Amino acid sequence: MKSNNIKFAVTEKDNFKESEIDSSVGGNFYENEDGEIDLLHIPEDAIEKMGIKDLPFRLTSSMVDHVYERRKELGFKDKNEAAKFIVGVMRNFDHVRKADNDAFMFTIENGRRIGKRVIGIKINLPNDNFIGAKTAGLIPFNRMEKSPLIW
Image 1 (cartoon, rainbow, N blue to C red):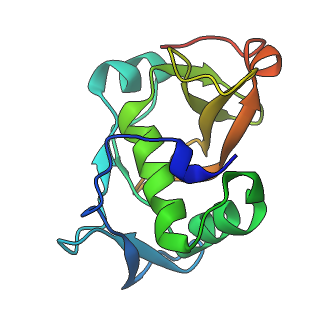
Image 2 (cartoon, one colour):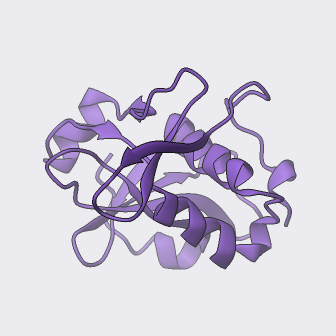
């Protein structure tokens, strides 16, 4: 499976790069073309169902490195493409499920299954400043279905 087969509402002009701003939790933050490190906000109704504080979604270099280096099945050509994938899922998720160890899974399940897998991003509970990705990839549907649906 190559990532260019998975399309989201991230345009070709959406580019991300490592900023000069230290995240203090794993390298520098990533920024968009406007220099913003707050890449998106999770919809308020999802935040309410999750029972967490409304904070911006950000990526750090360690988050992007993890997805780029460990998710070879997605075929990313570079780290910018990995960042685009993460932001694309977070812009287009249609389900939020409770995961293990105080984490949440944001998945695209409706009409976007890849065989018996769904596309997902796993986040930990947010720290005091932002919400970020723990990992990303293709999740077996039967395993993911066992996680409680929150939104």
